Amino acid sequence: MAPERLQSVTSIFRSGSVPVDAGGKGGDFERADIVFEGVEQAGGSFEARVFLNNPEADASTPMTPEHGYAGSFHVYGYGRYPGEPGPAGRPTAPMTRYVTATEAVRAAMASGDVTVTTVAVGREGQKGDGPGAGAIDPDRVSIRLDQPPPEGV
Image (tube, rainbow, N blue to C red; front, side):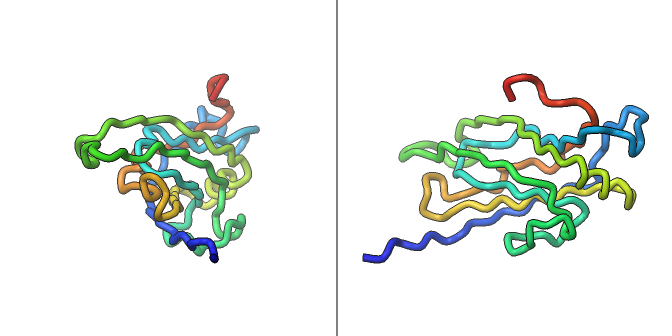
């Protein structure tokens, strides 16, 4: 019997202009991290593909610097269980995720404002059925220069 093919489930989160905490450094920095606060894991698992200055990015966009690709992170969601309330009433489990993307941020800053498009790709049929509508809050995305994440993150 052939294995069941799972369909991709995609949600796209587009930020406006993202503030860059440059601390007066301009383009003179050694490290840049894109910080995602409040990422929700009380749902399905997904890969979050991060693109800078490419608001048209989607699941088919090549993950290359020419397309603004900055990196990715994974969320291992714990899904919803039978009898659990719907999205408005379910418990939340927010977390913070970091993507170190020094060269991608440097290139995006060279063109002025920096926008972040996050393409969350999961699989239908998994516990939680991939990324939910509130998996990533585009208003809680920032870019930090030369400020590594706290230890243990």
